[in-house]
Image 1 (tube, rainbow, N blue to C red):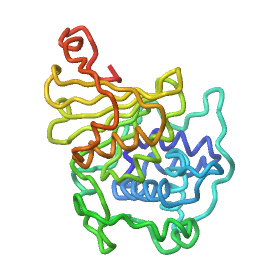
Image 2 (cartoon, rainbow, N blue to C red; image 1 turned 90 degrees about the vertical axis):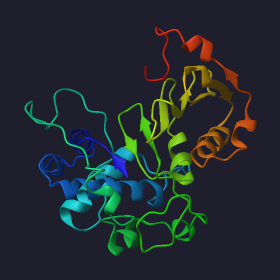
Image 3 (cartoon, rainbow, N blue to C red; image 1 turned 90 degrees about the horizontal axis):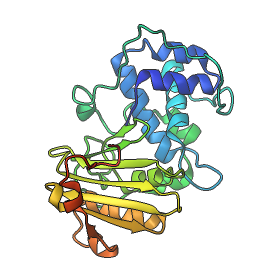
Image 4 (tube, one colour; image 1 turned 180 degrees about the vertical axis):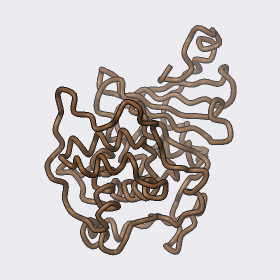
Length: 269
């Protein structure tokens, strides 16, 4: 599921020329907001890929999902995404930002909540229909075959996105979005988010910085990865508690540096 604020989704819709739906998303029901996050998550992983072979960008996936949930049928967006200038926001100053209610609704919902057969027929690529993971780490409530899903960790992005029920495909897709120096993502255990997490950032040199924490600040380690597959292997290995993932990179304990309270512990800080 993609957890994004309704005001952010409205902004994406305006960029794609969907102004009426942008106004609607600010007043849609809580269930409709959940469906947008769920359909958007499905589109990101199972919808049409980019010319380079990557998954759909979250902004476009959320815009398409919003139109689909509002109109009740799939269609393409009015236009390609544009970089807007000037005051074009549809969000009134008094608007109170909302997000999907993960605790209240998502855990009890079926997998791919809100994705109808019409959406699958219109958007799903044939290769995606055949791609089914094989081993279950944490089962989702679903009538579909169980896949390899990690539900005790969440992913947070530097742009404010939060994602639940992590899969290897999702992580591979999202690491592909680390294209600009300074962009980062953090994956944390829901039971102890400040003590157990792994994070990655794209560096100006073009490689990736990866850090993980295994308890207190004295157990904070750092490594550098040359390419995307190395990052995916580290992040997914951490998620699934694979004992071999740490052996694939050269890690340095930087805990002594971080014991200084004036030094950051997370990339975002």
